[in-house]
Length: 204
Image 1 (spheres, rainbow, N blue to C red):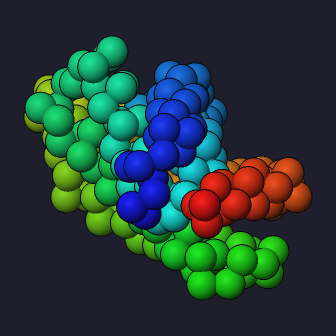
Image 2: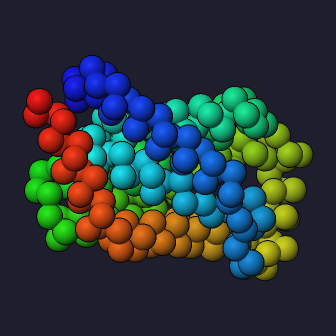
């Protein structure tokens, strides 16, 4: 990790990945059967690539800059609470996957790591939505009843916080985790060449 701060190439690569991730955050889109404020984006993919290539700590830095870039461009309606929750939810996926991969850099290890990361992401998403994100959005947009009412328009089964988590948060994070995992596995071979290039520089 020390080489990350000493190497202009690694720092530039990290900055580029953070910028790409931030752009992908803006290209989010809703899912028809989920509440409109729950949207899918693919921003964790470049962050995970960075974490695989340069280590988990680099992944944390890239994730932080991704959130910071979005914050600076778009601002916040939740006094930073939404951004903090998004950062933590992102780390719940990035860290388990990259840490497990660093232990043994094989395709099998990457797959196992992504499966464990998906579970961590779903659990973290449920807790942070219930205790941080949804309350913050409720405060910003007219109260919990209004938020739940809006969610119920997409899915009539949503009648409160518990059902919002069951029929909104969990499906959202399952879909995001599966899509991100599949894409990462599909680009594993070219990704491994990128990692080899970074590792070669780290040994210099």
